[in-house]
Every structure is written in structure tokens, then in C-alpha cells.
Image (tube, rainbow, N blue to C red):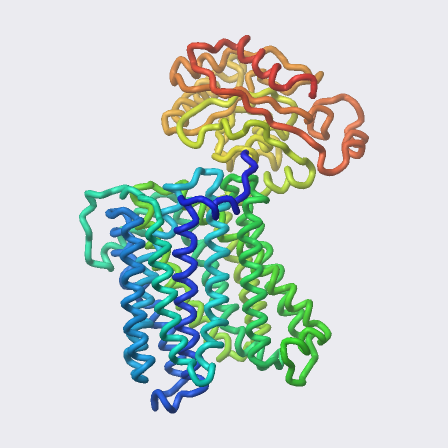
Length: 628
């Protein structure tokens, strides 16, 4: 794929204004909320006689409530109206909300401030579907992972900086209240100014009739999403991440105070480290995915969340300090760096988990329904976070310590991950393929950007080893249906991989005419549905490293379904452990060593009228060259 950096998007109008608009929104949300929670914690009597514990739970709850009530409506609005206009209107609403909040700050009217909290919840609810549906309209497929990574990084950095600034400003004497009131208005205005530069994003369904009943629309959205199993389970996987994160983050204040014996600066350090991890993991996705939507990273992220969540429990019970510490003295304590490492890794693997899920939803969802799908996901996220709070309360009432809550959440994450990946084994299969080409092999794609982002096509490749399909699968930005010899299809373990990838077994007509005809019917159906189909025209693995004669099966396929054909060539697999090289296989394996280099070369598209088996063989031979 192209080797552009995701950071170049920050210099381009199609991405940068939108990035800064959403960053400033997340930043302002948290400046305001944190300032309010801080002042109620440290100066409650001058504001209210209400129970502060009640308010500390009420305020976050009021922020989340609009996601449940209005997400269905906001998703419809984002599908019906141009998204740049939607973003500007939301930013104008933010300015109005911050003016109401300023009046509350200056008059010490708590109810105005609480109304502003609910207003910012509505603001975030309206912007959410716009946020993720905007990206597929302006980014190419090989930019989506990088773009989503930047958005996730920006969101968590905005949250972190907002929390720090809000806590610092509001306690500043004597102008803390004024600084928060004025600062929030200034940030809202900055957000509106950046939104003016957002390019037009045409509405995917301008004729949509709005259903103003949030209950029926929510049910309809979720029912629609269920029709696309990978998308729906990705929505659930995304919401599970927020469940996991909500439980872990909610424990940080008491964890820092009661278990680490730290002051407020230690709590800020934990948030900073976690946010850094999320940002780093989000940005790493582009590098590890090779600029494509690589859902194989999702199981990798899930494994990391469980491993380091459990290790956080172990490192916590090994921490023995009982004296009160500041950030500086905490870092000097035995075991503190281990704890910080675990929290960083939880953040990194969280980024690796969440970014590919967003990209998968964006690429596999019906574009006309994407905003409403995102809105449904936001409702699920809110529900999962509420359930997370209840689960944490139950565990605390049952006598769980906070480290034990970390352990229980890690174990529960492993159980949920196994369940989800058993329902959609494509995730796990892609993870195995991704792992193989980043450990045993080091695969370089040459001109892989030529592979079509959408539409039916046939891929034709030389057949060198039992790994061929896995290498192609891992290198393609889209799922590929493979036509393969039924004997290879039945090889133990690899059979599971091929079945998961919906490979199509085929047999010679003399051996099993029914299976051969069924294979051609299945290929025609896959191409009719716009899928990529890969065949190995040699019909068998090479025994010499040279190309065998190409058979005429591809012509039979093109007679039924004339679609473009892309010649591919694998280079470097001959002599590998799983090829038919007759030399000692163990000597070959050790002589090649780990990270054996190989290449997948993609040729230009060929039209059906220009194709014969001989021409295809010549094209593949030219692409392969002398390197077997």
C-alpha cells in the first residue's frame, strides 16, 4: 500500500479542520465538567446544600443521558443533512451552552451549570454520528485506519488536557471562576471557527423522513445493524471496550488515593499515562496494519487488555508503600514503574482494539445508514457504561478490592473476546494471518494499491506453498474468497482457516464432477455479490519452483461472470517449510530463519476479452521474475 504518513492528514483541509473541531469539543467538555466537579468537591458549601456524592454521580449521568435519548435522532439528522453544516450548527449550540454556563458561574446558580452539563451531553450526542460518518466520505480506504487513529488520539488527549486545565483554572485565586467561564466560551468559539473550514460532505440520504420517536428508531437501527453480522458484532465489541474502560477509569481516583497512597498528582499521572497509551496504540494501528483495515489487530488488542489488566492486579498487590506520596515520590517507590507500565500497555492495546473496529464499521456498513449505525453504537456505549458502573458497585459491595476488580475485568474481557471471535471467526483468522506474516515471514506488497477497493474481481496467482492463500489474505485490504484444491482445503488446522475465509473447494471433473460444478456456481455467486475471488490456475503446488501450465478454469468463470482480472505473483516462498521443495524441510526452515522476506506483486487490471490462460501465465511469470 502507499507509504504516506497519517500525520500528513493534519496538513490537509479534508481532515485538519474536522480534527481540530472534534478535538476542541472534547477539550471543552472536560474543561467544563472537571471544573464543576472540582469546585463542588472543594468549595461545595458556597454553591449548594445538596449531598456532594450525589452530585458527583448525577453530573456524569446527565452528560450520558442524552446519548440514550437523542442518539437515534442525531443519526438520522447526520444521514439527512450535509455534515459540514451539521458540525457548524453543533458548534454554535456549544457557544450558546457555554454562555448559559457562564451565567451560572457568575451567579453561583448550580442549576444553570447542571443544565449546561446536559446541554453538552446533547452537543456530544449530535456530533458523534457526524464524527465517524464524515471520515469515509473524505478519506481513502488505506487512510481510514490512520485517520481513525488520529481521531482517537485527539479525543483522549483532548479529554486529558481538558481535565487538567479545568482542575487548575477553577482553583486559581482570585479569578478561577471567571477564567473557566471565559475560557470555555473562547474554546467554543475556536471550535466554531475551525468548523467553518470543514469541506462539504453531501448527505447520503437527503430524502430521509425523520422518525422523532427515539425508542422505535433505536430498535429499528439495531435491527438493521443485526442484518450485517460482522458490523453488529463490531458495534458490540466497541461498546465492550467502553465497558472495560469505564470500570478501569472509574477506579483510578480511589486506586490512586487508597492503594497507591498518592495525592491528586498521582491520579493525574495515571490518567496521563492511560491517555498516552490510547494515543500511542491508536497511532500504531496504521503502521501495524499496513495502511489497510486490518481486523486481525482486534484479537491482538483484546489479548493485551486481558494480559495487562491481570498483570495490573499482580503489580498492585505487590506494591507495599503505605506513606502518602506525590507524583515525584511515587515514581521512586518499588513497583511503581511496573504499575505505570501495565496502565500504559492497557491503553496501547485498547487503541489497537478500538481503531480497527471503527474502520470496519465505516467500510462494511451501508453508507446511507452509517450515521444511524454510529448513533445506535453510541446508545449501546452509554448502556454498557451504565452497566459497567453497576457491575463495579456490585463487586465493591461483594467485598472486591480495586485490584481484584482489575483482575475480574481482565478475566471477563477474555471470556467476552472468545465468545465474540467464536461468533465471527474472521477476526481470529485475520489475526493468525497477520501474526504469521509479521513473525515467520516479512511480506512486502508491491503495487497492492492496484487491488480494487470495491466491486467484483478475479485474482490469479502462482501456487508455491500451502501459505499462499494466507499471505494473499493478509495483504489484501478486502476479504478474499479462494478457490482451492479440495485436498488442500481439508488439511488439518488450515482447513479451519480456509472455511472461515469462505474458501471454495474444487475438484477435477473426472474425480468429482458435482464438486467442480458447485465450485463454479459458488464463484459466480460471490462475484455477483461484488466479492474478490482468487484462483490458482496451475491447479496444484509447484514441485520445481517454476510455474506449471495454467488451466482453463478462469475462462469458464469469465464466461459466466465477465469481471476484471488482476494477475498476482508470489516471490520468495519457494524453499519455505510449507513448499514442495524436496530438500530437507528443517534445514530450509533454519537456513531461512525468522522474518523470511517475500513479496506479493500485483499487476494491472486486465479485461475479460484480453485474457487467455497463456496470456495470464506470461503476465504472472513476468511479475514474478527470477525470484522464486
